[in-house]
Length: 127
Ligand SMILES: [Zn+2]
Image 1 (tube, helix red, strand yellow):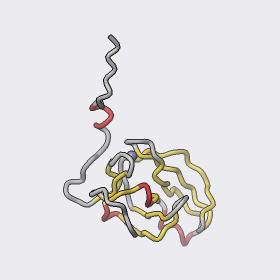
Image 2 (cartoon, rainbow, N blue to C red):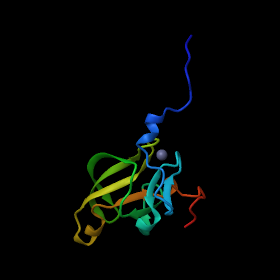
Image 3 (cartoon, rainbow, N blue to C red):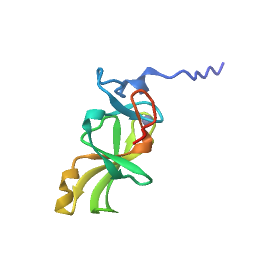
């Protein structure tokens, strides 16, 4: 009587963008949701919370968390953590504001944790 199906429903998938035509992308390491175009990468020389981070112009399939002031290596920034829409994993943060004028270029950009991302082909990133 209790027919509990484990097959995924189509509603949860419909809001996740899974392709950008043929452009190379970064995807969530957990659920393979597309997160950003590799062309949108600004710098790989950033620090995430636990490891290396990527600074990226724009991203998709991310939910914005609570906005807060955080003391980072480069000064106080107003940031919000961002979460994957596919699996809710924390992917990094979004820079709302930087207090130091030399850091203003980060405003409106995303810092994504390198270890949370895979390239479109699912290979591990190695630099
Ligand atoms: Zn995900």
